[in-house]
Length: 72
Image (cartoon, rainbow, N blue to C red; front, side, top):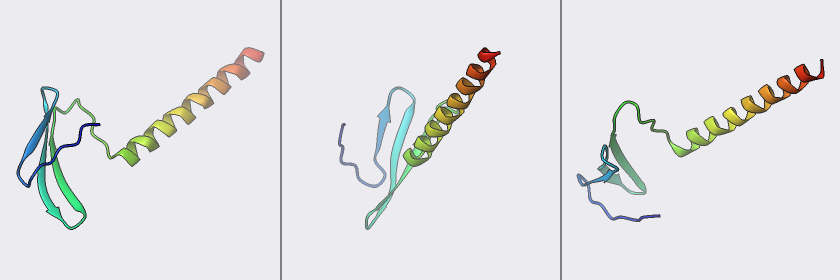
């Protein structure tokens, strides 16, 4: 993990086309802005984890359906 210190208004660049800017810092909360092309998905980590779990569950159901079909 890369740890950086940034002040309000400062940015960092990820790859060639993603810019993360520190918009505000209040107490224990940091507000960031992210500029990226539309084709780059951006999720909060807890949402991304939920999506991954839903995808795994859906794949398991599809595998079970395929297994049942193979019985006949």
